[in-house]
Each structure stands twice: as C-alpha cells, then as structure tokens.
Length: 316
Image (cartoon, rainbow, N blue to C red; front, side):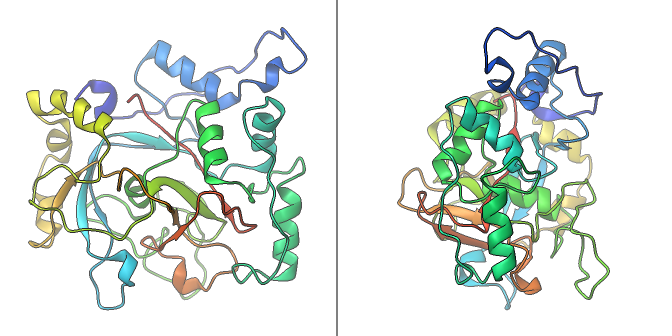
C-alpha cells in the first residue's frame, strides 16, 4: 500500500482563484476540485477544515446486538484505507455549480409531507433549498447525479463502510450515535473528528449496491462483493508490510473484536443490483434511528426531499 493511502495529515486550504476563460469557467471546477489538484501536486494530503481525514484502520461495520435491525446484521470488521470525507452534506449552492456546468441534473421530486415522515414545513424547506442558491443540504437528487457531482469535484461517493467509520469511529470504538452514546438531550450532531449531521440532517446516498450483509466465507478473505479494481490494487498491499497494522501499533483494536467477527478488506458490497444503500436518518426521523448503523435501500432513481449526500476523497 502506498504512503498516500496509509495516512492523512492536515494542511492549510490552498487558494482557489482561477483564470476565467468563458462564461461558466469558474463554475466548471469547484473549490474541492482545486484543493484536490493542489494536494496531488504537493503530497498525499487531502484534508482541510472542510474535509476531515480518516487514517487507515480497523472499523466495525454493522451490529450484532438483540436490538439491531435485520439489515444491520451481522457485524464484521472492515480494514479500511485512508480517506477524507466532507465535513458537511453537499449544499444546494454547491450542487448548483454542477448543474450549471451541465454535469448534473437539477434536483426534482414531489414535495409531500407523507414521504419519509417529514413535517409540512421541513418538506417545503428541503425542496425549496434544492432548487435555490441555499446553503441547506441539497435533496431530491438521484444516486447517479450524486455520483456525478462527487466526480465533478474530484471525489466519489463514500462506501458505506467508510460512512460508518466516519460516524462510529475506529476500533476499539464503535459509537451508537455519531456524537457518542447519549441520546437524552443536549447533544450536538457532530462527530469527535468534526463531521456534522451524520445522524439527522438528510439521509445520504453511498456508493454500495443495496443488499443485506453476508457472512464472508473465510475470516480474512477479501469481501466477496468487492469490486475488481480493489482486488487488483491489493497486490501492493500483499507485497509489503501492512501500514494499517503499523498504524494500529498495539492489540487494542483486535482485542475489542468479537471472536466471531470476520475481517473484510475495504468492503464495497455486491457488484450489481437494483438497489442502492442509504445511510443515516433525516432531521424529522425518530431519534432512535439517528444511529451509526442505520441503513436502508432505495432504487437509484428514487429522489426524495429527505435524501442527500456527501463525498469522499482518496488517491485510489
């Protein structure tokens, strides 16, 4: 595994001034895309204050407790490479740049309070934010357009394993809620690393094809649903001492594992399927669903006023 994948360090945000060569030149490349190019020129770092980085680590995916829903089980341990993730959900203003550039389709869906349990006021606010210059999270966006936006800014949709790593932490931690264990009030919907609204902003598209978790065939096997690109890239991982093991530095993460849990490398879910995974809850969902393991499935064209996304970044 290359050094670029083994760790992330913070740096100051680079300048984003650009020459203008046409009416939409400044709209065709976002601040995130410029930051990504600068990071490639100067080193492996992808982080700034708007994009926390997560080092390579072991992280629990799913839950095996008696209160876990069927789609959250069985739990396994994911070995994840380093990545960065947006601190905030993509806003309507940010998404609008992609629409003006002709890369993304405008948000569109019915405004109805009955959809997803939203109140009339929330449904109206989210739908309005999706079609105006607003800093509210964009919604009413199809999975393919969420993916297109992330590619437009030099990123990608996160895998659900990465999403849960950001929300729940790395082993030996696995928080029940993004902010911790307490749900009795007084909490702020922000992780210790500074990622915001993973619990109850809008629910979020992730990259994975929707499916129930499967128990891997062997404890250390590559995830059977992983994509071919990662399997090919794993040759470098197998040929050298593993930076993940070096970063852990002690046995605390492994000791926190249930002995029955399998370890899967960078899981991506099935290769094909009719559904896509949605992670997290939305602001009007019951607090009990604001957990780090909450997941559901939707058709990729199923845009909804409570459904948005954020992007991840890496040097893969």
